[in-house]
Length: 323
Image (cartoon, rainbow, N blue to C red; front, top):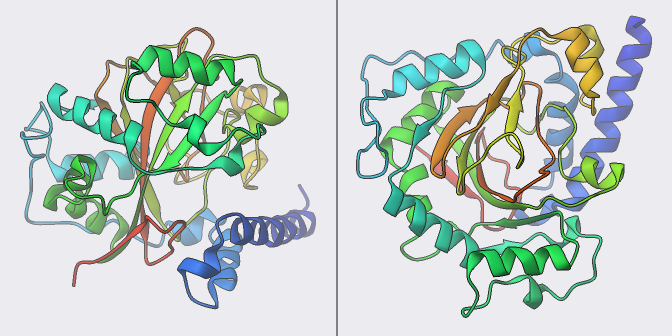
């Protein structure tokens, strides 16, 4: 692509997407008056991987291990996690303790606020909630009857005794964030996703993040994913293209959606994350990724982002200053 044409497209995309994000998330309400300019600065300038790569991962002499009160493999060190994200863009999966996972699932189903903007349906928000007399399968089937392919909600991390908050704001996880982002000022958001196996339109696949894409939400950021039910190739596993958080082919340098064929032609390898309920992994989602469309069963997943600096995308986001 001609350089002038590329820069023009990049500029126009950044203007369009910045305004869309600003309006959609009502960013002025949770941030300062210049937030729109800040978002544009990130969407334009930090589309260049070379600039983002200047924010180096901080090396740490002190090494921590994940808390075995939460995780099964307590020999997984923070330095190893940081090194894996930095080199590959992702970690391998590790497991949350079963009783912790069950508590997180219950809290995710009952806590937080639904994102009704992502629904075509005009269903009353009250009807989206899980009833006390429902089991999980009945609830999921009710959502399917409403033709809801994906339901999202933002978790309230200020909720009293929130188990997820205790994990993601633990000293070990925050040490990973501090060192990978090379910052003591960190924004945190936790979202819960229910994805259903329904026949959907191309537009709905677009809104459900089921095309390959890459994110550009902070000058640097990463995400922690937690599967809350068993996930295999038929119910929407996360797919990631290794090392694309560092460099992308020319075909994929615009922050847009890309077809499977495009990605297959440009990259030899991909990583598909499957695993039992409680499977957890980190990714730098500046790299190319997508969620497969579920075809046989539902998927329950938590998506927690850690961003460099202060940008709040909802009233439930947390800003942590480690100074």
